[in-house]
Amino acid sequence: MVPSPRIVIIGAGISGLSLAFRLQQRMPDAAITLLERTERPGGTTWTLRENGFLVEAGPNGFLDTKPTTLGLTHDLGLGPQLVQATEAAAKNRYLFFGDRLKQLPDGLTSFLRTDLLSWRGKLSFVWERFRTKRVQTSDESIDAFARRRAGNEAADVFADALVTGIYAGDPKLLSLAACFPRIAELERAYGSVIKGFFAIAKKRRADAKAKGVPYERPGKMWTLGGGLRVLIETLAGQLRQPPTFGVNVRSLVKSGDPKKPLWRVQADGRDRWDADAVVLTCPAHQQSELLAELDAPIAQAVGAIAYNRVAVVALGFRKSDVPTPLDGFGFISPENTRRDLLGVQWCSSIYPERAPNDCVLLRAMCGGWRRPEIVDWDDNRLLEAVRAELKLALGITAAPIFYKIVRWDKAIPQYHLGHLERVAHIDSRLVQHPGLWLAGNAYRGVALNDCTEQAGLVAAKVCDYLHAP
Ligand SMILES: Cc1cc2nc3c(=O)[nH]c(=O)nc-3n(C[C@H](O)[C@H](O)[C@H](O)COP(=O)(O)OP(=O)(O)OC[C@H]3O[C@@H](n4cnc5c(N)ncnc54)[C@H](O)[C@@H]3O)c2cc1C
Image (cartoon, rainbow, N blue to C red; front, side, top):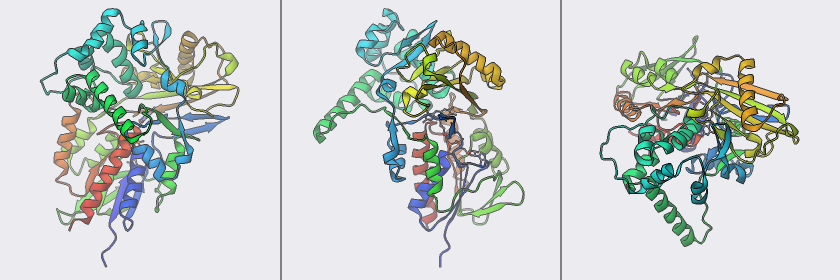
């Protein structure tokens, strides 16, 4: 009898959990062991529930621009629990620009009316359509791309807001091709991002018409009633072999046939697991430590992937203490007028049931790539900084009736210039280690959708490898 293949996955964040789930679907006979250092699944994806408030400690939702996370929720039977962000949250996003909130345009009319850009800035932005396409293939920063294509004003306002909202990073350091591959592709394929957007929207409309269904603009944000923890707990609960918690994996050792080696995964203490295939989904610095003895150059390349630090400061207020209508997603503070906050999400306006009936829940993001030291501020100093900004932006002077602070020392990987080259280098060396894969948010996208997409792709590769003669 052929023994069941043994697969060990290290790290039970969304990447490790969804990988285990997809592998279990593909290989019902495999023994899949998921090892997690902490005492709970989810990694940065987790929801705290206290005093009637529902606080996301990490991600707040996932978009339907890629089908992978939405598909995963349906496969888990969570379809009926899906909750879409409110229309106001989808439509109204603000910048705390100078000393007041200004709405970000969401269409041509609001773009023409906005005073976030001067007329010169607006002209430069729309002129993107006619600018010639870049011929060099060298990596380009998001900031350089935005200045080249849309002008300095648009780079300072829109590119900065986009980068702050997703990466809490520095647009001058982040690689456009690694962070926003779709935008880079639009320039390559259509010669212009604006042209590309319009061409794709036109095709989607035509497809919808041909199918006889109404056209819906993609980009809606979703979560689950009860928060993203429901996705995590359901995933963990549907694994035939539940994750093993409290296991701090320390090293990997390879032995036997070089083409189909045997892997030994060693954790703190005497715990160890033998495996035919191993996938690391823990953060890059942890992967680097695990790889140090096996392959120093890979370990070095992986360890060089930088992360920012973020403090999430959630605050609950009585509705009656908030003088400004919270009619949208929240606001971002652009770099040139930023004080101590990156931005604030108006959680109870984005999804229902995030706060008791007579209350609202806000979530401020502090720190990021440029102000990492803020994460070390003690709770009082952080709260004071956030309250000072909420007073300026929203006129809130009352004390919060609830707060929760979560600090992430390694929050979001920063795909700096050269990232794609680094990933290609890692991949080229990995072929020397059959049966070993590196996954997680450090390589090919930081969004939940990217993690779940990668999990599906890696599951297919592991399955092919183990089934190959
Ligand atoms: C504040 C914040 C807000 C975000 N907002 C959004 C959002 O709104 N939408 C979105 O799509 N994405 C968002 N993201 C990004 C997204 O949440 C992450 O990219 C994603 O959750 C990463 O999942 P992962 O499984 O790859 O890694 P992680 O969640 O980091 O999981 C890795 C796991 O590995 C474990 N581990 C580490 N070392 C070891 C070891 N040696 N042995 C065993 N286990 C180990 C860790 O304990 C952890 O559980 C946000 C992230 C943060 C921090």
